[in-house]
Image 1 (cartoon, helix red, strand yellow):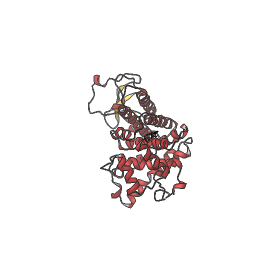
Image 2: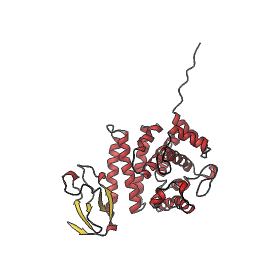
Image 3: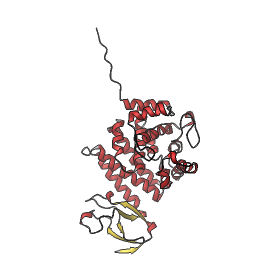
Image 4: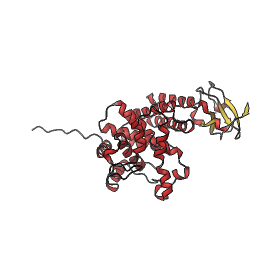
Length: 329
């Protein structure tokens, strides 16, 4: 049956998020007009879109806003099963994980950053750690992430993965710190969702002073979003606030010098810059290779990041040094 609803009570969900043969965790609706929705699947029903008669162009389906947490939970469950499978390629695992990450960012956008969104974010960041542990080669990580469609999700996942690689190369071994770093890196640009599309799609060199100020405000907005959760750690707040600071004190928003930047934020700042250089975007139509990116940071930018972190990234890119064999005469 179709009924008149308040559109603010519903959230759009990509049709691709529902896998054929699985049970839907919530009621699913098709939008007929701004105020008219028809239920096409009831909670618990199996997905069988190919047997249903509705427009093929209906890419977006709708769920009740109050049910969206459940929807994200199922996406994460599927992604977790995929990550643990030995029969699925790393590229497909990354694709499933990107859908989960996208769901979380939408969850935060629509429902706010609450306990459920935090727990969901932890699951995705932990899965990124697992991918890195299984495939620690930076070039392979870049190739996997480059195939993702959503720029913000691609960048967030890349920064999280590279941050973990840097930390491991710096001999960080405490699981709690690696988990905190991966989570903070995943959420470092959460404030970007608040920016208008024209700012997000504009190259930074073309921005006016006011537009640049609006862009830079994403760090403060990100902090505001995360501070709504009392259990979020101070280190994660610092990552979000300080990921555009640099060692000489020429970053923003507070122009902090290296010694005053949070240790986690130092790593994420470098990973963030590296990811921007190796991935295509409006600011970088011609991405560089990983090796060229290291040279660009070191020579062109003058290596403005925490030196131990940069050395660690460079070493991770080069791989372990070959063992030397002494010749005995």
